[in-house]
Length: 378
Image (cartoon, rainbow, N blue to C red):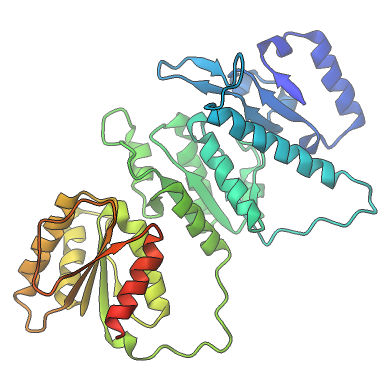
């Protein structure tokens, strides 16, 4: 283990120790753990250390100043410090197991491998949490080190999916280049951003803004995104005796939601489709005319309007209901209107004839589906 700092780089003895270790252990990538005590530019690090597992035990303040985590004494509130410590201890333990004698049982191969793009410091913990969660389900991640990947093409070739975490930082265009490389490799792409991320101002370059608005970007809580990645990489096998769905296909369900709740709407729509319902979702990519047209078609042609309301503004959902009413009054047959509302969401001011509102618990997706099926299939 190397406690890496500018002082370590300036020490001839530390450099000599690394050279001696390297001379007797050619597979350094699994035997050296670099604990970064301060921020050092990648270009300034010894070449030998650029591909090793790095654990940044530092943070950047709002004034762009670097502070060592847990210094001088770790406190119970130092969440980042303890998260890094757990990651480090887990990886060391896992490596020691793999370095046991050749008579030991071979490690169970992963069920799948995905490429989790390296990120800048603000997203380091998010990437670590994602990799840790996937590992629990037998999904490995490349590259192991959260550093600029010089072997991205070779690593991508070993992976089934490309996963990328995004924020508003341009980072010299590296996220855009990672995404471009994955597109060229024709890998399925799953990207994430915080639904509350502010990237509308002039502080975000246009190229980064286009990346954040891409059709494969999911704005959702990180836990939900991790579940989506898991389900995409390891889809649930259908039961052998599963029958072909019945009459549900005659009913068109418009699963509508604001952009903040779109990820949940997509999840609910997929489940309804599996149960034999015809489903349509709003489109949120492209020009405003295209978005508005997709929503109007949903109002005009659906048999059931299912509105999901969890994180969106109540004003936005009220506006949706106003527009729905304007479209529905022109129809001969009126759709059923069902609202799935989070328990903590503000009440809506619009009430439409025959509208049913359900308050969903913390298991929002499952509770919404349970109530919907009880209502529609009754």
